[in-house]
Length: 296
Ligand code: RIB
Picture 1 (cartoon, protein in one colour):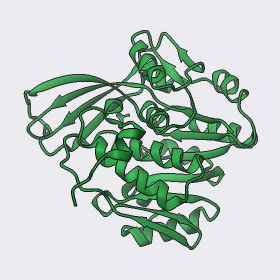
Picture 2 (cartoon, protein in one colour):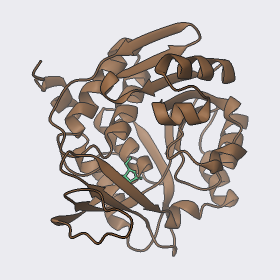
Picture 3 (cartoon, protein in one colour):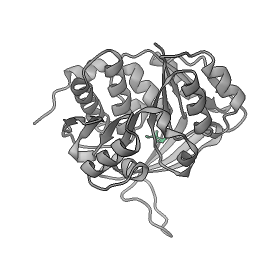
Picture 4 (cartoon, protein in one colour):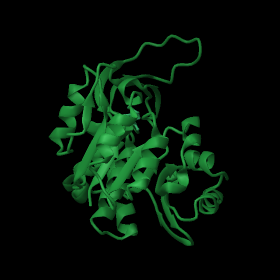
């Protein structure tokens, strides 16, 4: 079974700020760094660092070579990444003193996918292969339909949540990985139990992993649930913590681990990620996750 991640690749321009800039305010940042990012790229790198064999598809522009290099360095298979003349996607990210972030996206090449390219990529994958998606590329509805017809298992992180998801047939999704805001937007409810119930009712055949910030995370399949708490750390930058969680959870499941073990590994990896700056560079290696000592 192969794992294909069809997702975004962004250059992240990260500004360290005292507080998030307010409407009408001009604010000087203390520092600017450029990191590899994009939910797609981050999740592929997390899968690879966790030890999974992952293929990435998506598009970059002329200035996107560093994104390709970063994935290849970690062993992600990039044969299907297409170079275009459309500018590489980027994100303008403010990170405040508590490590919280604000992200402004420019889709660029990520949002210039064509049916022809999608068909070419998916033709290389078959029944039983896994397809991982986020919501930072265009034609998500077409990718889901085509992959489903080919018998692929569709896994969706519906992030960022927007109206583009309305055209997607989400009954074709086998596993949702989402936070509580996205869960509420997708299915309804406000408290975790309500969101889980709403997800269960709306997508009865799908599994779900709902992340709950400081409350941890929960896996649900029908009436079966597994709860996981967080590992407490001092946050420096929360960017890509969710992507790290997604990549590590899927990698553990793919290698046959039980859900409780997979959630625990993902919680450890994402906790380490928030102690580091940047998106992709903050994703820890499996060996680091396994030996990291968390204080109680
Ligand atoms: O999830 C974090 C990512 O969101 C960043 O790397 C940024 O590029 C946006 O896609």
